[in-house]
Image (cartoon, rainbow, N blue to C red; front, top):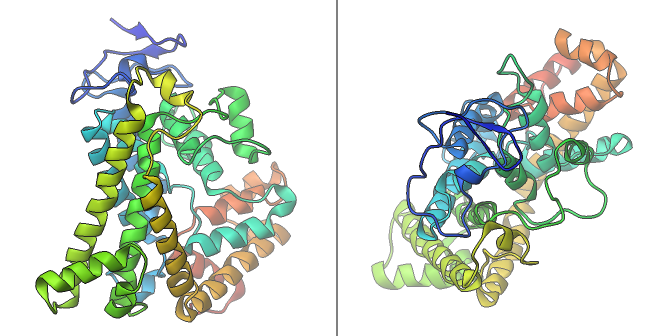
Length: 396
């Protein structure tokens, strides 16, 4: 027999969570449900079903060919948005399991956290945001929400994926409360189904955000070493990671690069994960409900102050020595030109868009459809579209 959740939204048979849940963990039984009522699965929890819907989404598949740092043509070793998202999901699930939070929800938010990214990484997002300022700009979290509530067309009865409230909250707020002027897609959806934007999200979303930090600071070092952006000596001198690099060399002596990277990643990520677990356990002491997590007025999942300081120093090192490296910066400058030129061309002549997008543009605020179209592109498709529209190729 179907049950209803606290908001009155229809739920199907309730599936027991995979492991023991602490009182501060999200519970599928207490989910606020889905915007469009539908019977739930008899074999999967509502959060597990959300995860499956994201994995099967078109936007998720496209992450395979979206840049993390290095553009696709530079080699197969380097992370894409897809491989990064899978690594974040693994870390988030491990943290949630140890803390007796809901593993499925943590994994789901982690898998969804990069859905809204443009081609060409942060450079592409900056370009699309700059060229669309007159229509509200571009924000990847807002676009991710737009994808899963509007742009994905997989179901006959509704647009989007009809994810649970908790997944949508985590997608929008995993980095913390949203205050001040909100991006248009978030403000619009919040009027339809409030996501309590001024509060912290549940613990699972907070863990996904920390898993993202752990994954990218570690794996950007991995990619940078393989690409020759860093040397081992550079990493020895880096904050936080340098201590681990020296430890690997002291224990093993000179190693082939792949073995050195493996040992470095193993110990660096272990320190970061163990620090999060210890700090978060201490913060959660006495916390007896999900509401207490949301109402705590601060992040309950966190790094310790000392490690956070060292982590910020490592990020600053990476910004200066990797993201601003001439090899990366030159490629990204050209990528920004691709995004800017395509947007301006599509706005000037919507007939350049595919027929269904051209039709949608006729009934929309000028520029909004072109923005959605470009945001969904992979790196290689953006380059192909540039060649089609301008009858010339651009080399990144």
